[in-house]
Length: 173
Image (tube, rainbow, N blue to C red; front, side, top):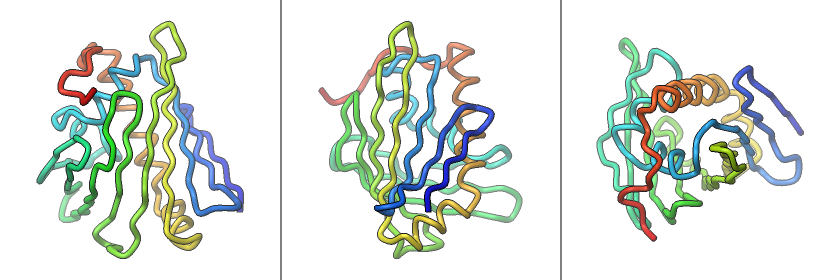
């Protein structure tokens, strides 16, 4: 299986045919420091992650190497819990686990890197290594592209409004 989807917001989502990995690539009008902050600052993260109409509540958020996280996304009477551990957090790279609590045996290892394109633009590279092709395909068919596209569109709005400073305050060196 080799699926590639490009959304109107220019996120490319690709399933690797050889390994159960999902690759996501997305360009932003932002510096690497701004994207790092958007992914590690709890207040900012909760404002943009996930699909439109969902409210994200963080139970814990310790964005540092060895830290952990848990949040609940809710809409109407529906709640979806997610949790994981930060394995490595540095300004150019975040490695974490990701578990949807509705499928607790399916743990993905996610790696995000921030490629500086110059002129205040950054390419986000994200990959999720799943434990099986079935698990990867379940992610792909869960509607994840809607959450990715709409979440990144909200992040674009925050960036355009100047609500994310270009410093990596609180980041590990």
